[in-house]
Length: 53
Ligand SMILES: [Zn+2]
Image 1: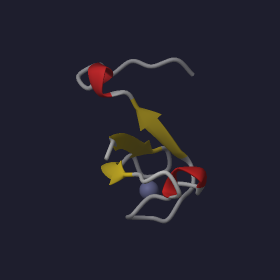
Image 2: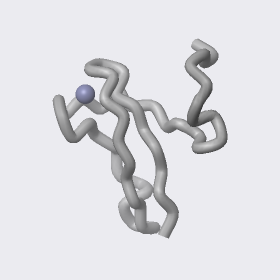
Image 3: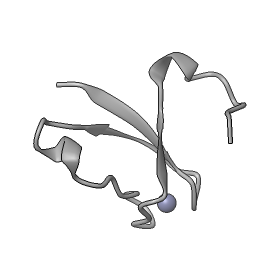
Image 4: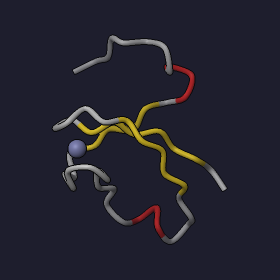
């Protein structure tokens, strides 16, 4: 199963989430603060700090 990296835009916690086909349609929430303001981080940009806004 694919593992996706996310970062919370509210508390800036990064976390991984394994998504099945059914879970992929559901909103991703931050495990720390519960915010839905999360952004998916492509793995290849793992060490890059700059991002488009
Ligand atoms: Zn958060």
